[in-house]
Image (cartoon, one colour):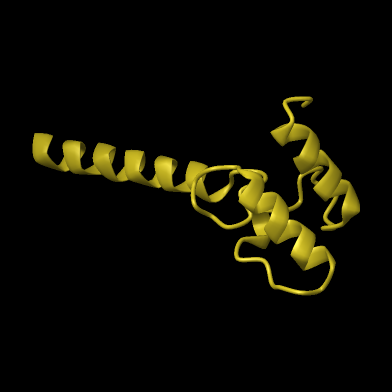
Length: 82
């Protein structure tokens, strides 16, 4: 019985950690970090030059639209203003 409880607890922990990694606002390339690279990728997406590897992380203001407002919010985040 202890073995099953340990397995369930471990599985739960893995799921929580995976979910946290997948929903990192601003991490548009899904590498686990929010960096200037994410800003470049989002800029190129908005200029219609590239696709987004992780569009779910690009909607910085959570309004359901990926646009210039998200880019500005990401810039402010990287500058330490938000």
